[in-house]
Amino acid sequence: MAKASSESGRVGKAEHRTTINVTDGTLIPLKDEGGGLSAWNISFFGAIGLLVLLPILSPDPYLRILAFVPDGLVATFTVTIVSIVFALIIGLFAGLGRISHNTLINRISTVYVEIIRGIPLLVQLFYIYYALGPLLKMQGPPAAILAMSICYGAYMAEIFRAGIQAIPKGQMEAALALGMSRSMAMRRIIIPQTVRIILPPIGNEFIALLKDSSLVSILAVSDLLRRGREYASTSFRYFESYTVIALIYLVMTLFFSRLVAYMEERLRHRGNVH
Image (cartoon, rainbow, N blue to C red):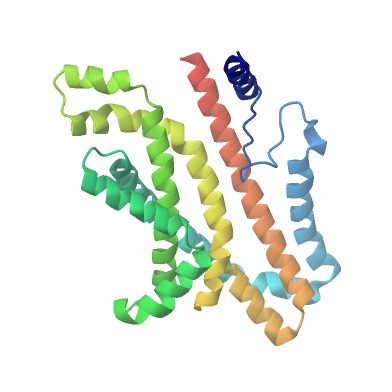
């Protein structure tokens, strides 16, 4: 009787368990949040307003700072976009390896994911740049892109694995019954459906990578943060320099958060229609 009561208690707890998801899109306004006074609107348009107003009120130094950092902005986007492309490729193969029935491939993929996710990105950047850089003849942006790709590839692997496993097993069984090989069924049936499922989390990872790209400034990469540091170190305008850099990052991340939320809404609507 006591055992039955204990089981009932556990079931009751399980029924009231709540999953909490915190992502890079938490500032996206909900439909019932109140339109113009939503947190996203206040943050996004407030940051843009400051970026416009500060150079008007105080051209020196704010206008000089804005004229000094554009090439750093290009470097930031270059590192981010190239890294996310390579991370997707690595993540796809590692994610497939994680669900592979081949024990060796499965173990290699799992060990890669566990090791990379267990080491901070900053440590990986230092390791590839300083420890492996001389051996690989790789410095600056290539080393930064390699480190970011390897690090985020491990997280992408888990996204791909979860997305593939979310597809009902019956679809693979039906494809095999129609005479398809497992690899063909994966390419033509499973992965195309997986892409729709994983697009929103991939968008969130892109935003996280965009913010983490600021770490590459320590590797002699002239990204946005490093350009801000260079201006601050020569003009001693630290408050003004880092204020502008912070506002630019805020505008970029909130803008892409809005795109991710819009994409999620479109995918959800399309799923409901079908």
